[in-house]
Image 1 (tube, rainbow, N blue to C red):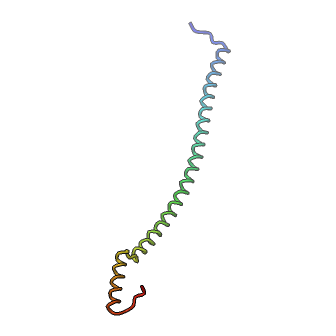
Image 2: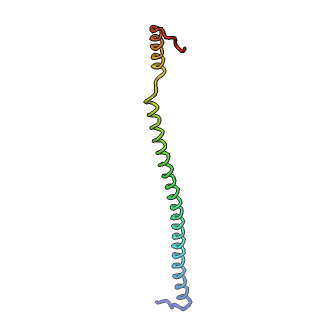
Image 3: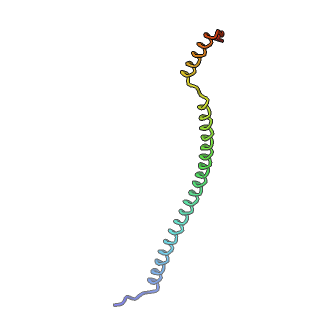
Length: 103
């Protein structure tokens, strides 16, 4: 037995269908907004990372200069025991030659 479908029942069915479609569209719009927010935040993170990369490059350059300076200092560096040994030898030579030391 086929059911008699009245205009009212048919209208409710159509409304329910449109409501479902509208709900899905609303969810899609919400998801799109969320993706836009994520994109904005990623843009901000990208800018911050770019800034950090620039700062890191600057720090690396400065460290390179410091390393060169330390290497230069080490080339001219004399250890204390070597200096004291050389000083003792100079004092001995001064005594043998008869030179009065500044000490």
